[in-house]
Amino acid sequence: MIEILVSVLLLVGAAFMVLAAIGVLRLPDLPTRMHATTKAGALGAMMTMGGVAFYFGDSTVAARAVAIVIFILLTAPIAAHVIGRAGYFTGTKLWAGTIKDELQERYDPETHKLSSGLEELEPEMPTHTEKGTSNQ
Image 1: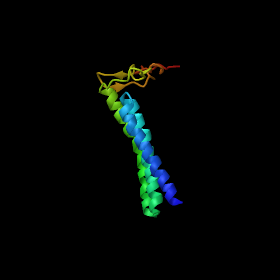
Image 2: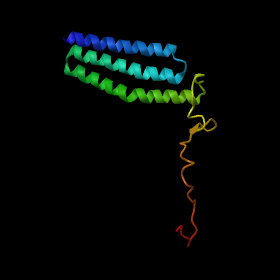
Image 3: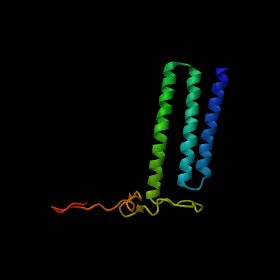
Image 4: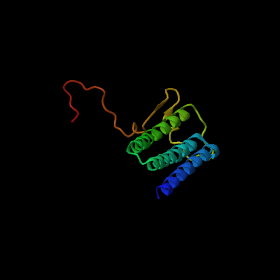
């Protein structure tokens, strides 16, 4: 019974990794490629680690597999965010079918800074107050 579970986990993991590879080859721009590799690749690696943990049936191997899965869960989204941000800031072109670029109006290419968009909503605070006056 364990052999069937291990086989299913390994095959599903391999299928997700193949989907991630196909996504890298077929998708049109960096953000969509990054999305495919982050989601499908991470899920494929986690399924493979599950298969490894069940195959060996040892608590130390299972603990290492769980640690690897936790590491992938923590690092894959962060790595994808950093790669996507670096790609955007270096001027990687978006796909022609991209409907909206939400960072375009918030990104200053001169300073490489993003504005939060909340600056317009916050009331201006006085920079200094004179002695003897109150704001009431």
